[in-house]
Image 1 (cartoon, rainbow, N blue to C red):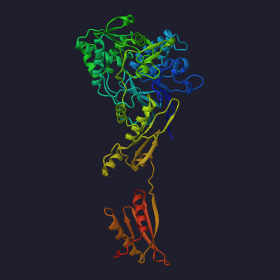
Image 2: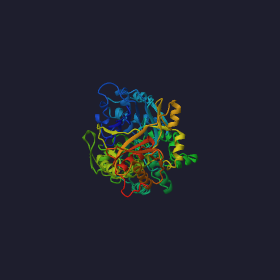
Image 3: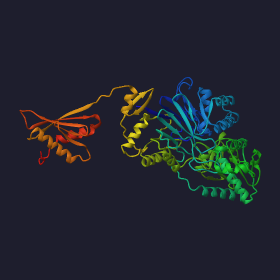
Length: 603
């Protein structure tokens, strides 16, 4: 039986280091190639030795697909392609292709230049890796080779994020990457058509969460920022350079304007200027409101938000700083946090998910003393707030996507095991489909029932309609009678007459015969009349004839009666029918085996 195999090398019952291997119809596809924010050792990158112990990956992979530019989905790409070795195609959308190398270079700088790590990819490797990238357009079907095709759908989440459908013949898998089912201030909601894949592989970061109204969260966020600034405190908001950052900037910019606030707002790193440049460039990926506003002004050019300089962190008085990265695992956000952590007037607002092992995760769990590098202890006195402005789908969103795509099986990745377990039960209960949640290195195998496409001739369809059958329902199977012709690897169902004509064959009549023994004391001719009367009373709506040649005909079925001189009471009924009346022939032979009712007249 044909089967699809899915093995997570990363993001199996875990968030971070997304990397999923899919084997479908003899093809091997790698979905995402990310790094883990919580580790600095071998566990940072996926274990590619699972694919092959020695040599390059090119022979083992047909293509690599990257869903979006976040490092937990693309951070290991140069390592995989340049250090382990892969020369095949890497597919991603145009915005991802533009932004991915910037984030990879930024990550490399922090890791190599600042932390001095070795055994890491170089700037040149990032460039060489990006040369292998083939850009994808939304809703465009791309033929990777003669059999493998892929198609991208809009995923919301961040600029350029896409869900991908992988198809070989009639087997298909949809991988969501990270997606958001609710539109936000700058992006639309994810969308996919009713493609009914064999497996839908979905992220499940917020598997057990159903988020409250966005408006309440935004009001709460502005209130907390406002209160802290009013009492002279500083607010640190760790973000990733693209996505949530733009969302919150638009929110604060409009609030500052409305309230005539004077405290400065800063955004760290030069990444933002580049980020806003890409939002302008890929304006079609944003939502309707931004596209409309864009005609009058650029939504991403802010009046109140200025570029941050490292020396500003020591300035007295209130301020709001957006700093990267979002989980406080390195970079500028961590430097500022160290400076401000000791003052209870200050506040840190974590607007998104933090991976285990990061400083962000530790302070959200209430840790007041942190062990930093060089064995130093940092006391956390500032207020810590968590507000989910996450651009991930919540439990309701995941269920919504299942309703949209109607998959035959479900597979969860990019989430915590306990939360996945809860969602898995809910999905199986509500949709009556299997739901899997493999751990890293564990393979899930799904048996598929590939449908064989057959073209049906128009004449046959017209004939079927003329017979007065119900109109075809796409969701219900329907039996069609015809002749199947296989030619040039394609199948066609045509009427028998058309098949004979096309193939130049003569028609042969095939008839089935069946003997039934019956105990009846009447003469052979009387028994035949009794059979005729019996069938006439039972089979309304059928053509039943008693012919002069001593036979009874029901449609195409012929019934004859004979007996031997030795046993005149044992009648042998001979039934003969053409294959079209197979069902009726079987019914009559079963009926006559039961005998004739005693009160039947033979006149």
